[in-house]
Structures are given as structure tokens and as C-alpha cells.
Length: 591
Image 1 (cartoon, rainbow, N blue to C red):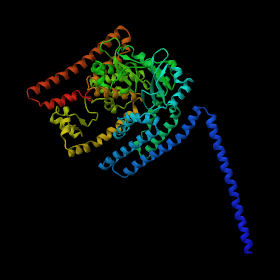
Image 2 (image 1 turned 120 degrees about the horizontal axis):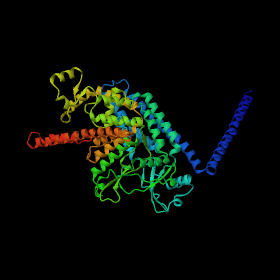
Image 3 (image 1 turned 45 degrees about the vertical axis):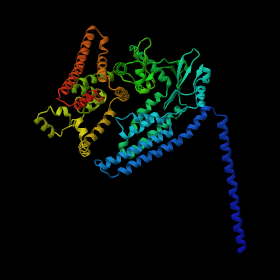
Image 4 (image 1 turned 60 degrees about the vertical axis):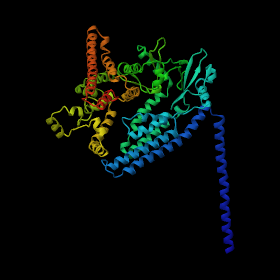
């Protein structure tokens, strides 16, 4: 019995073991055939463009997994380190800054690893210093120097896809080594068969194929972080960047922008917009007139050409003011590398501004353009009722009009943007009764620059504690402002901020604020100047009256400076005091 039982069980064991070896080889054989067939189909049946799409889809899974992993780390970092801590405490302030820094470092790292659109989106975030915490925009500026490099095979493949020809079949000469590279494209020099020198802008070959997937992933990550940590809810920012990025990826759109810019600015004889070669331009390849010049940031090179830096800055401000206040068609990415300076042909030392890279523009509708002109006018005139009105016309709540006006002017206004603050210069003019009344209303004096510099660490800490509730309130109000005004103005702010930065780097040689104000007031009356004689005369007198106000403002500042110099000469003021006042008056903040 025992023997039979053992034999029966052993037979059952052997029979079950015999089944598995039969199924396993079939699975392996089937998988091998499927894999081999797919590989053969990929290698011999698909076109290079179809192969690239397959690679991109496979790689996108890896990019998405890396990105979601970073998103989770950032979200839980905030949750873990801020859990249960009072938002008004020093510990919270310290921890959130550390969380911001770690999050920024992680975002930079993932942007570099994923490349392409991630780098471009990161570069866009780095310019949003008016919205994002300092740790983010300062850290993400590292991405400004990040760029891909196309291989020669990619360049040939791109030309094959766009023209069904290689570069040497289209150009007499083509240099495969790029002159410059950025996050979306790189530029090569070529010579056509007519001898024209051409700048050939080549988009990285896979960017358009990656666009939808990469933007979706980035938005999902930001939304996930925003759900877990509400103060990091910046997914709406990505919507703005997504729309502008889609435009930048279409080089035909860039060519059309360039031609419209030329038409808009052709009356400014000191501006040059490079010619576009339409027959050599597609959505991924843009061919333009090659420009010999220097970047506007290369001050020494500008001076070597015998050009006047002050003249260059005046022309720069007038050029962009014309776009903002007259045409409403505004270059939205005017960084140092997109603005060249050269000596105007046929002149001894007259500067010419060359405007490059027309991929990103903003169009201000006619109503917003007029309201923007009027708002700028009344900022200069310090007319708060009109400032409030025209801010509301631009969809900004009246209670935020001072904040919005400060962003438009990009300089301190005639009074602090918070109602509880009083400038030191105004405080000293107030009587004792007025000061007592102000204190009872919860208002207080802002320390002067000199007082700030002389404060000890303890005094600065005490001052920060006193101001923290107001600063937090201002941060919230600023976010409200940016969610209210026409979204197109976001790129106008970027333009204004870039111009301010360039003027500052050149030493504030011109009063950009006054130059822009003159252009703004003429833009406000642009339509009236086209009407009948009576309207023209009225508009002309109003423009001249405004010019007198601006001239008076400049004259009073000049008189005040001379007065201070005399006081220093006769020993009434210390020279250090004069230098401090003069620096403030000529500073970027003042202008």
C-alpha cells in the first residue's frame, strides 16, 4: 500500500512538473518573436521621424517618473518640516526658507536632467521675481546658461524633414558649429549662393514632439504640490508659460512677428530689424540676415566703437516705449543677448539698435493700451483718484491700485504702497498732532536709508518682527493683483524690468521714467492727433503742458542737487550725506 501510494504521488509530482516546462518555453518564444518582430519593424519599416517619436514616448515615461518623484519629495518636505508650526514664528520663517531652497535645488536638477522644455520653463520661472520666493528665482537663474547642443546627424535629419535636402544643397557654405545655443534652438552661420550672410536658427529636433507630454507632466506636478502645500500653488503660472512657449516653438510665427515689428518701428531710424528669408523658413528653421554687432551688455565694446552709452540707452528706452504705448505689439523677451548695438551705416558715431529674437510677443488691445498710457501719466502727476480709476479699467481692484501702479512704474511712488507706512521725508514735515493721530491709526514711519545702515542685528530683527504682518499682507495682495490684471501685461512687466536692468547696469545714465512718460502721454493722444484741427491743437497743448511738468520735475531735482553741493562746500553738510542723497536720486529705484 505504502509503495503504491509513493508511486502514485511521485507520478503526480512528475506529471505536474512536466506541464511547466512546456508553458515556459512557449511564453519565452512568443515574447522573443514579438520583441524581435517589433525591433525589425522599428529598424526597417519606420521613417526617421517615426523612430524619433517612438524614442520620445519611451523617454517621456522616464522623465515623468523622475519628475513625479521630485514633486512628491518637495511636497512632503514642506508638509513634514512645517507641520504644526505657528506661521508667525521665527522657526516657521526659518524652515520655510530652507524648504524653498531645497525645492528650488531639486527643480533645477530635474530641469537639467530632463532638458529641453523643462529648461525653458525653468528659465521662465527664474524671471518671476515679483511672484516667487527669493530662493526660487535666484537658484533657477542657473538655468539661464543651460543649453542643448544638436549633433550633426540631428541637423542633417532636421533639414531632410523640412526641405528634403542637406544643408550643403541649400547653402554655398554652412558651419555645423553653432555660434550660439539656447534652450529651444541654436544659431549657425551660412552663406547662400548669392553671397548673403545668413543666421540660421535651428530648433532642437524633438521639442515639438515632446511639448504636450512635458507640459502636462509639469502642470500635474505643480498641482500635486499645491494640493499638499497650498502656499506653493503656482500651477496657474505654467498656463501663462505654456501659451508663450507654444508660440516660441513656431518659427513661422517668429518670422511674422519680425516683419510686423519692422513695420511698427520703421519711423525710428535708429532701430534695425533683421530681414527674414521666407523661402528658407519653416516652423523649425528660421533664416535671417546675419548681424555684425555687439550685445548691449558689452559696454567696453560699445565704447570702443566710439558710441555714446547715454545715446544708446535713450534709444533703447524710446524703442520699447513706442511698442508699449503706441503700437501695443511688444517684444516680450528683450534680454541682453537679443539686443545688439552697432554703428549706423554712413555715420561717424551714431548708434543703431538691432532687435533680435522675435519669437515671443504680447499684443495689448487698444482699450488696455490707452488705459495704460493714462495710468502712467497720472502716476507722474501723483493723482491718486485717476490712478485708482485707470487701475480699475485694467481689471485691478481699486484697493490694490498703489501696488499695481508701483509695478507699472517699477520705482517707488510718491508715497508707500501700504497705507500704514509713512516715508521718513513726509514724517519730518508733519506736526506733532499729525504724528500722534497717525500713530493712533496704527501708522508708523519707515526708517531712512541711513537709519537702516546704522541698525544693529537686534534692531533689524525687531524691525522685521514689527513689519512681518504687513509684509505678509502685501505678498497676498501682490498675488491678487497678478491674478486680476490682463494676463498679457505680465510679459510687458518682463519687458519693463529688462529695460530697467540694462539701464542700471550701464550706470543709470538716463532718466528712463521721464522718457517713457513722454512717449506714454503722446500715445494717450495718438488717435486725437489724427482727427480734425481742433482735436489736434487740444492734444498738442496737453502734451506740451505735460512736458512742462516733466521739465519742472527735472529742474527742481537739479536745483536740489546744486543746493546740496553748496551746503557741502560751506560745511553745512558732510560729504557722505550728499553722496547718499545723490546716489538715491540717481539710483535705479528713483528712476
